[in-house]
Amino acid sequence: MAKDKYPFYPLNSIMKDPYNTDKLAKDIHIPILILLASKDETINEKYSDNLIKAFKDNNLKVITIENSGHGSIIDKKDYYKNMSLFFK
Image (tube, rainbow, N blue to C red; front, side, top):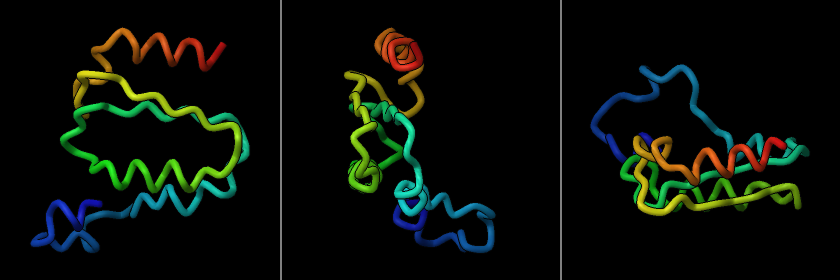
């Protein structure tokens, strides 16, 4: 993901964790909540879609928080509402 956004930086040398969450997803068998920002300016939608597809388990819940960006999603009431409902 970072290579797509910043192709001119030597990210393999800088980043210690490649964040290959989509490759780990197949081994996760607990309830998962993915909250997406509808106007995320940092994470391209294709990466979110790939992560969602990687979770083949029925324990996946995906919710898009409307009118939110990558940095502003936590300012939305729906963010906390959905987190609270998920963890009850």
